[in-house]
Image (cartoon, rainbow over all chains, first blue to last red; front, side, top):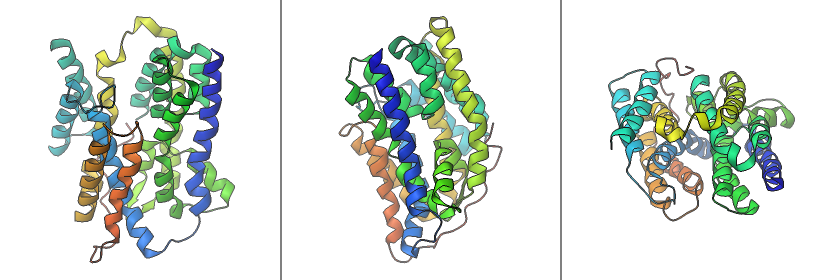
Length: 103
Length: 220
């Protein structure tokens, strides 16, 4: 259990420093135009990477297509048909859980 | 959003309690408040990994806050202490919802979106710790599909409508993320995927365009 507390303290400190780093070092001033055009695209690149890694990453870092991918795919369909967020999230959970129960 | 965060918090409590104990699970949620890093550290410890391995996994996942913080930084005013404090309110969902396109963020919107998520995360964790075995495996409820679906919403309804360059950056980000997942430790693919934004350096861009307000109420 002592191990657990070491991990907790290490996470508290590192998370705080990492979250503060960008805002403290670069904040409060305008950046050059080239930097701005890269920064404008960071959200798109980061979000799509989060979607694919959280959808297709297996327990051992391998790529897998499982029930979760089915659920996220169904949510994508809801979003393309302009359904609301909560419906999409509900569908993602329901399809994933349903497929796990059936398959 | 707070509802979804609470549900994921419950699943963290359920999974963490047998590994690190009740108190450490709740304290971790109170002072770390970074879901993916907490899940990862816990999974490593649960699988018999060392302290170093657990902390490294969490740091790698949290490092995505560096490019996210860099994106946020030009929108922040005030001294370093105040900016650093705003940085602490950076969680994926709030950061993404506060994105106003063209590299601009609304820091107060981000703070307002994070505030309800914080008690939801902490109380959810506490509930999961207490309910423990009565709930069973959170995967049975499809909880692991919740956050990818949410990020997909922000991508489809926000970023992908802000121009061809954003679509290209998203495609590059997804490609890098997929390609590196089997090769690099968890967390690294997402950080490297931020390099997809470098296509912003190509000449002949559309310039930082405003992207449309996300429709619907993202703060569910």
